[in-house]
Amino acid sequence: MVNFNLQYQKTANRTDVLGIAFPMRTDGIGGVLTQSENLAALRDGVIQLIMTPRGARVMRPDFGTDLKQTLFDPMDPMSIENLKSQIAQTIAKYEPRVVVKQLEVLPQEEQNTLRITLSISTKNDLLTTTNVALTV
Image (cartoon, rainbow, N blue to C red; front, top):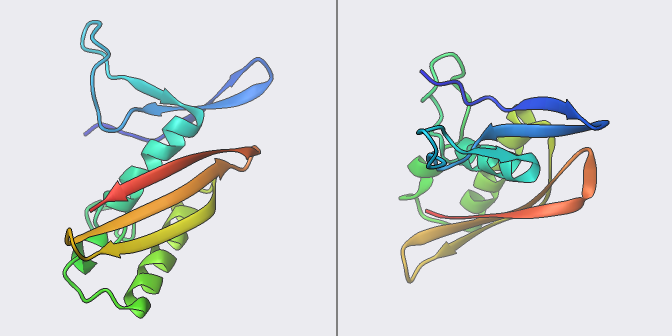
């Protein structure tokens, strides 16, 4: 099993975050997996965290969210708030380097999908943000 944990690397008096790009792909040179850095690595980690069903990781039964289970539930305001709360709590627990500045969960009834958008930054650099958008 491949370990996808992100790691810190000290370079030039600052801390960089390195990880495997998501979705996984090769860089075209010898079949090596592509790396992502800093906010891109954290963005990829947040996507993996949100899309992983709870219970999928044996040693971490509460890792992930119940997003896929709730897709077929009625999307009333209470369900949306519960899902938002679960996503925020899971990110706070398993990705403490990330600061969630904005989180929206919007049901799109015409397409029968759910749109999740986040604006995140790192605790080391609160001014630089990146957006995460998922349609499930």
